[in-house]
Length: 268
Image (cartoon, helix red, strand yellow):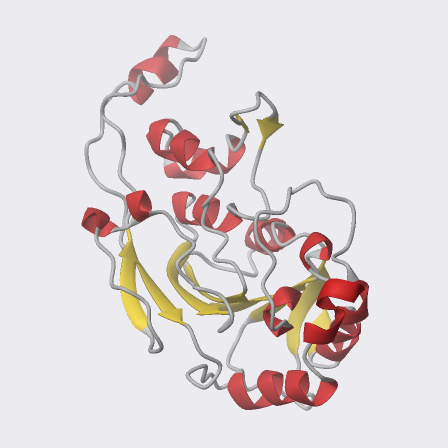
């Protein structure tokens, strides 16, 4: 199965970075308002690059924070409507693979020791400031990889960004191909940290099961990066589609894009 995962900030000619996840304010229209794509440009991309059609609508949803995509997928999985692993086409100004978050150490040092089916039950961790966190707007795709929900990721990055906002520690053999102006193929493969203790639990049998040290790597997840609009070519063959408003990364005058997107989906 294949899922379109679209962020509204892709349709901006200026990329906002390093904004606090809990920031309640929208981006300033004085600073960012003029960088929003026109309606014609948005429709041309949805139809010409992604292959969406108002005559062949896809089941989908419009959400606020981009981590709500993950919650939508969980809902579909639990209903038996989305099978795992599935392919994700991630159209965004940010990779959302954990750069700038401390969750990746929680994932590598803790989460991966749990049986796969139990991992979604253990997303919570303490960040470097001592705050309790779970899947966030900038790391939810890395959690999805750890849950083994994803068979591949195609990251269509904003051409006005650098498209290299991911963690080298999460790539296979810690190797990456540099990004210029053409699509590149990397591979995500998470690896247990053998130096970390196993999670504790009051159930002795559960502890025994968890203490069976597994040195194997996680499955490989092909990770393609498309840094230009011109190289984004899809035929609209998506099983589900999500658009995230990302209010702390977009100005209010971009909200019209949500109404346009709704013309191409059956809201689920």
